[in-house]
Length: 141
Image 1 (cartoon, one colour):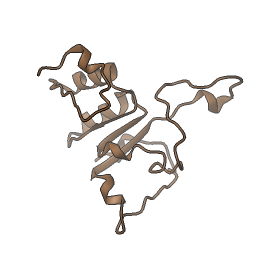
Image 2 (cartoon, one colour):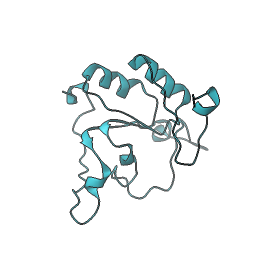
Image 3 (tube, rainbow, N blue to C red):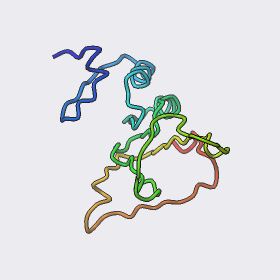
């Protein structure tokens, strides 16, 4: 059946998916920013321009390029066990210092990576390394 406005705004909590075909990367970003959960979104593409636009303009706490959205997890990000998650941009209450006014957007750039590669007896190890410099579009070839 054809998806309706209500479908785009529904969180099914079930094995149900609504799919929309769009005409451009701009239409995709607009749809995600309007109807998405702001939690995790991904793009699979070889087009560098579309990849950079998607990573920088999608308003979600985690944005993936050519990698599984299942990587969106506190442990997998090297933060330890999650006690909660916020998709809002301000969550502080009471007296707030500078750290309390900042938010983080995680960008994961992969090459078709899946979480399954990092599970089980022959799992690849997670490597959490501090970045020497800020993220730059140059990391996408």
